[in-house]
Picture (cartoon, rainbow, N blue to C red):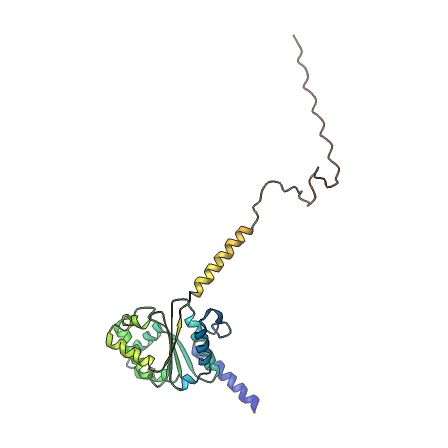
Length: 254
Protein backbone atom coordinates (compact mmCIF):
# COMPACT_ATOMS: atom_id res chain seq x y z
CA UNK A 1 0.00 0.00 0.00
CA UNK A 2 2.83 2.40 0.83
CA UNK A 3 4.51 1.60 -2.49
CA UNK A 4 1.24 2.17 -4.34
CA UNK A 5 0.73 5.54 -2.63
CA UNK A 6 4.29 6.57 -3.41
CA UNK A 7 3.89 5.67 -7.07
CA UNK A 8 0.65 7.63 -7.29
CA UNK A 9 2.26 10.67 -5.69
CA UNK A 10 5.16 10.44 -8.13
CA UNK A 11 2.82 10.22 -11.13
CA UNK A 12 0.82 13.18 -9.84
CA UNK A 13 4.00 15.26 -9.45
CA UNK A 14 5.10 14.37 -12.98
CA UNK A 15 1.67 15.27 -14.35
CA UNK A 16 1.56 18.59 -12.48
CA UNK A 17 5.09 19.47 -13.57
CA UNK A 18 4.08 18.87 -17.17
CA UNK A 19 0.94 21.00 -16.87
CA UNK A 20 2.76 23.75 -14.96
CA UNK A 21 4.71 24.82 -18.08
CA UNK A 22 7.71 25.45 -15.87
CA UNK A 23 11.11 25.43 -17.61
CA UNK A 24 12.32 22.24 -15.92
CA UNK A 25 15.97 22.87 -16.78
CA UNK A 26 15.84 25.87 -14.40
CA UNK A 27 15.79 23.76 -11.26
CA UNK A 28 16.99 24.45 -7.73
CA UNK A 29 19.94 22.11 -8.27
CA UNK A 30 21.02 24.08 -11.36
CA UNK A 31 20.76 27.43 -9.55
CA UNK A 32 24.11 29.10 -8.78
CA UNK A 33 23.46 30.22 -5.22
CA UNK A 34 26.94 31.77 -4.92
CA UNK A 35 25.89 34.54 -7.32
CA UNK A 36 22.86 35.52 -5.25
CA UNK A 37 22.94 37.88 -2.26
CA UNK A 38 23.00 36.03 1.06
CA UNK A 39 19.67 37.57 2.11
CA UNK A 40 17.99 36.37 -1.09
CA UNK A 41 19.32 32.84 -0.60
CA UNK A 42 17.95 32.80 2.94
CA UNK A 43 14.54 34.06 1.78
CA UNK A 44 14.42 31.58 -1.11
CA UNK A 45 15.23 28.60 1.13
CA UNK A 46 12.37 29.59 3.41
CA UNK A 47 9.99 29.76 0.44
CA UNK A 48 10.77 26.18 -0.62
CA UNK A 49 8.71 24.91 2.30
CA UNK A 50 5.63 26.34 0.57
CA UNK A 51 3.49 27.50 3.47
CA UNK A 52 3.29 30.99 1.94
CA UNK A 53 1.04 29.49 -0.76
CA UNK A 54 -1.35 28.22 1.93
CA UNK A 55 -1.43 31.77 3.35
CA UNK A 56 -2.03 33.24 -0.15
CA UNK A 57 1.10 35.38 0.05
CA UNK A 58 2.91 36.75 -2.99
CA UNK A 59 6.56 36.70 -4.08
CA UNK A 60 7.92 39.66 -6.05
CA UNK A 61 11.36 39.39 -7.64
CA UNK A 62 13.07 42.50 -9.00
CA UNK A 63 16.34 42.80 -10.90
CA UNK A 64 17.96 43.80 -14.14
CA UNK A 65 17.70 41.51 -17.20
CA UNK A 66 19.84 38.39 -16.90
CA UNK A 67 20.10 38.48 -13.10
CA UNK A 68 18.38 35.10 -12.68
CA UNK A 69 14.84 36.14 -11.70
CA UNK A 70 13.12 33.57 -13.94
CA UNK A 71 15.45 30.77 -12.83
CA UNK A 72 14.85 31.53 -9.17
CA UNK A 73 11.06 31.47 -9.41
CA UNK A 74 11.11 28.42 -11.67
CA UNK A 75 13.22 26.56 -9.11
CA UNK A 76 10.86 27.53 -6.30
CA UNK A 77 7.86 26.57 -8.43
CA UNK A 78 9.21 23.08 -9.09
CA UNK A 79 9.75 22.48 -5.39
CA UNK A 80 6.20 23.68 -4.69
CA UNK A 81 4.86 21.10 -7.14
CA UNK A 82 6.91 18.37 -5.49
CA UNK A 83 5.41 19.50 -2.20
CA UNK A 84 1.90 18.84 -3.48
CA UNK A 85 0.87 22.30 -4.73
CA UNK A 86 -0.35 23.20 -8.21
CA UNK A 87 1.68 25.84 -10.04
CA UNK A 88 1.28 27.56 -13.42
CA UNK A 89 4.13 29.42 -15.13
CA UNK A 90 3.28 31.92 -17.87
CA UNK A 91 4.93 34.88 -19.58
CA UNK A 92 3.14 38.14 -18.82
CA UNK A 93 2.61 39.03 -22.48
CA UNK A 94 1.07 35.66 -23.27
CA UNK A 95 -1.15 35.76 -20.18
CA UNK A 96 -2.47 39.20 -21.10
CA UNK A 97 -3.32 38.06 -24.63
CA UNK A 98 -5.18 35.02 -23.29
CA UNK A 99 -7.18 37.22 -20.93
CA UNK A 100 -8.01 39.65 -23.74
CA UNK A 101 -9.30 36.84 -25.95
CA UNK A 102 -11.39 35.49 -23.06
CA UNK A 103 -12.84 38.95 -22.44
CA UNK A 104 -13.69 39.35 -26.13
CA UNK A 105 -15.42 35.96 -26.15
CA UNK A 106 -17.24 36.72 -22.88
CA UNK A 107 -15.32 33.91 -21.14
CA UNK A 108 -13.13 35.94 -18.80
CA UNK A 109 -14.84 34.71 -15.63
CA UNK A 110 -14.35 31.11 -16.76
CA UNK A 111 -10.63 31.65 -17.41
CA UNK A 112 -10.19 33.39 -14.06
CA UNK A 113 -11.84 30.42 -12.38
CA UNK A 114 -9.46 28.04 -14.15
CA UNK A 115 -6.47 30.10 -13.00
CA UNK A 116 -7.86 30.08 -9.46
CA UNK A 117 -7.37 26.30 -9.37
CA UNK A 118 -3.61 26.90 -9.22
CA UNK A 119 -2.32 27.70 -5.77
CA UNK A 120 0.64 29.62 -7.22
CA UNK A 121 0.59 31.63 -10.44
CA UNK A 122 4.05 32.65 -11.74
CA UNK A 123 3.88 35.70 -14.01
CA UNK A 124 7.23 36.22 -15.72
CA UNK A 125 8.58 39.50 -17.13
CA UNK A 126 6.01 42.04 -15.97
CA UNK A 127 6.82 45.33 -17.66
CA UNK A 128 9.39 43.88 -20.05
CA UNK A 129 7.08 44.70 -22.96
CA UNK A 130 4.88 47.77 -22.71
CA UNK A 131 1.18 46.89 -22.94
CA UNK A 132 -1.85 48.97 -23.88
CA UNK A 133 -4.37 50.26 -21.34
CA UNK A 134 -6.91 47.57 -22.31
CA UNK A 135 -4.32 44.85 -21.80
CA UNK A 136 -3.36 46.18 -18.38
CA UNK A 137 -7.01 46.35 -17.34
CA UNK A 138 -7.46 42.59 -17.74
CA UNK A 139 -4.18 42.00 -15.88
CA UNK A 140 -5.38 44.17 -13.02
CA UNK A 141 -8.64 42.21 -12.99
CA UNK A 142 -6.64 39.03 -12.53
CA UNK A 143 -4.54 40.49 -9.70
CA UNK A 144 -7.67 41.78 -7.96
CA UNK A 145 -9.35 38.38 -8.35
CA UNK A 146 -6.40 36.55 -6.76
CA UNK A 147 -5.97 39.03 -3.91
CA UNK A 148 -5.98 37.00 -0.67
CA UNK A 149 -7.27 33.99 -2.66
CA UNK A 150 -4.14 32.73 -4.39
CA UNK A 151 -0.43 33.43 -4.53
CA UNK A 152 1.12 35.47 -7.34
CA UNK A 153 4.83 35.12 -8.02
CA UNK A 154 6.13 37.63 -10.53
CA UNK A 155 9.37 38.96 -11.95
CA UNK A 156 9.94 42.49 -13.14
CA UNK A 157 12.88 44.55 -14.33
CA UNK A 158 11.09 47.74 -13.26
CA UNK A 159 10.89 48.99 -9.65
CA UNK A 160 7.53 50.12 -8.27
CA UNK A 161 8.39 53.71 -9.18
CA UNK A 162 8.23 52.73 -12.87
CA UNK A 163 4.97 50.77 -12.75
CA UNK A 164 2.87 53.69 -13.86
CA UNK A 165 4.33 53.09 -17.31
CA UNK A 166 2.88 49.56 -17.09
CA UNK A 167 -0.65 50.25 -15.84
CA UNK A 168 -0.99 53.64 -17.62
CA UNK A 169 -2.90 55.23 -14.74
CA UNK A 170 -1.77 56.40 -11.26
CA UNK A 171 -4.89 55.05 -9.51
CA UNK A 172 -4.68 51.63 -11.16
CA UNK A 173 -0.94 51.47 -10.48
CA UNK A 174 -1.40 52.26 -6.78
CA UNK A 175 -4.23 49.72 -6.48
CA UNK A 176 -2.19 46.96 -8.17
CA UNK A 177 0.89 47.58 -6.02
CA UNK A 178 -1.24 47.70 -2.86
CA UNK A 179 -2.80 44.29 -3.60
CA UNK A 180 0.53 42.70 -4.44
CA UNK A 181 2.63 43.97 -1.51
CA UNK A 182 -0.01 43.61 1.23
CA UNK A 183 1.06 40.00 1.82
CA UNK A 184 4.34 39.62 -0.04
CA UNK A 185 7.99 38.61 0.12
CA UNK A 186 10.20 40.87 -2.00
CA UNK A 187 13.48 39.56 -3.44
CA UNK A 188 15.92 42.03 -4.98
CA UNK A 189 18.59 40.66 -7.33
CA UNK A 190 20.95 43.62 -7.60
CA UNK A 191 23.61 41.57 -9.35
CA UNK A 192 25.24 41.61 -12.81
CA UNK A 193 23.69 39.78 -15.73
CA UNK A 194 24.47 36.05 -15.74
CA UNK A 195 24.36 35.95 -19.54
CA UNK A 196 26.77 38.88 -19.78
CA UNK A 197 29.16 37.12 -17.38
CA UNK A 198 29.04 33.92 -19.43
CA UNK A 199 29.67 35.84 -22.66
CA UNK A 200 32.63 37.65 -21.09
CA UNK A 201 34.14 34.40 -19.78
CA UNK A 202 33.72 32.75 -23.19
CA UNK A 203 35.43 35.71 -24.86
CA UNK A 204 38.31 35.58 -22.38
CA UNK A 205 38.66 31.83 -22.96
CA UNK A 206 38.88 32.30 -26.72
CA UNK A 207 41.45 35.06 -26.28
CA UNK A 208 43.60 32.88 -23.99
CA UNK A 209 43.38 29.96 -26.42
CA UNK A 210 44.52 32.13 -29.32
CA UNK A 211 47.53 33.37 -27.31
CA UNK A 212 48.60 29.82 -26.46
CA UNK A 213 48.42 28.62 -30.08
CA UNK A 214 52.05 28.50 -31.49
CA UNK A 215 52.75 30.52 -34.61
CA UNK A 216 54.55 28.43 -37.26
CA UNK A 217 58.04 29.87 -37.95
CA UNK A 218 61.24 28.91 -39.81
CA UNK A 219 62.94 25.54 -39.31
CA UNK A 220 62.69 24.14 -35.87
CA UNK A 221 65.87 22.08 -36.13
CA UNK A 222 63.98 18.79 -36.50
CA UNK A 223 63.29 16.76 -39.57
CA UNK A 224 59.96 15.33 -40.55
CA UNK A 225 60.79 12.08 -38.80
CA UNK A 226 61.45 13.80 -35.50
CA UNK A 227 65.26 13.30 -35.54
CA UNK A 228 67.92 15.96 -35.29
CA UNK A 229 68.98 17.74 -38.47
CA UNK A 230 72.38 16.88 -40.02
CA UNK A 231 75.28 18.45 -38.19
CA UNK A 232 73.13 19.05 -35.13
CA UNK A 233 75.32 16.95 -32.88
CA UNK A 234 72.92 14.08 -32.66
CA UNK A 235 75.62 11.48 -33.57
CA UNK A 236 74.55 10.89 -37.17
CA UNK A 237 77.30 10.90 -39.86
CA UNK A 238 77.48 14.01 -41.99
CA UNK A 239 76.44 13.59 -45.61
CA UNK A 240 79.39 13.63 -48.12
CA UNK A 241 79.81 16.85 -50.13
CA UNK A 242 78.32 16.84 -53.58
CA UNK A 243 80.80 16.34 -56.50
CA UNK A 244 81.90 19.58 -58.22
CA UNK A 245 80.53 20.15 -61.70
CA UNK A 246 83.17 19.81 -64.56
CA UNK A 247 84.44 23.12 -66.05
CA UNK A 248 83.06 24.13 -69.47
CA UNK A 249 85.24 23.22 -72.47
CA UNK A 250 87.74 25.89 -73.61
CA UNK A 251 86.95 27.78 -76.82
CA UNK A 252 89.25 27.12 -79.80
CA UNK A 253 91.05 30.06 -81.31
CA UNK A 254 90.68 30.63 -85.02
